[in-house]
Figure (cartoon, rainbow, N blue to C red):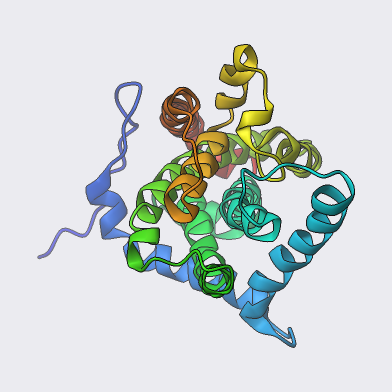
Length: 275
């Protein structure tokens, strides 16, 4: 007789990700991701084109008010291209953070009924944002050709590395907020406001060179600062790459990921009881 009993043990140690168990439940991760994609674009007239529409409208508004009226510098790069490159990375981060923080409440019914590694939920929520990012990149290629900044696929060799760092930051923070949201629903009001304000503390509409040198380390505490700075340097060939900000942002991305996973794993055993 085949023994089909599943033994569930509490996590040991401060930081533990059971990669084998996550891989065993990979089909469930696909289900969560596909469900979120269907809900996201269901009964919409232009479907996935919303992924382009939003950053395009934001780029137009920023170009008019910050590029034309406020004369914001862009390190010699055409301002629409400068802003759009930062926006597509920022949008992936904000999408992953927003949806990860709400994902546990959104899947409360299945959490209360069956066992599976709960970490799958915030991870799959963040992975869905890659579709929007990929669609947005198509327009970025068009803009690179239009402004004569395209030098072949070498423009995009750095993108996978930057996406991994963005994924770490969004899943780490999203897992932490998602776990807190299970007990304190205030998160659903605080998180959107926090993300709206955070974009102005991120060099999306302005270059890092505008910040006084002695305060740049503060900007680096935001993991997206170094990521966007590196994206403009490698994709657009901007004149400078601030290695101090890039290093601090890299460390912060890993710190957010480790801290978020530790908190999530320590609290997940209570999710089914209080959600």
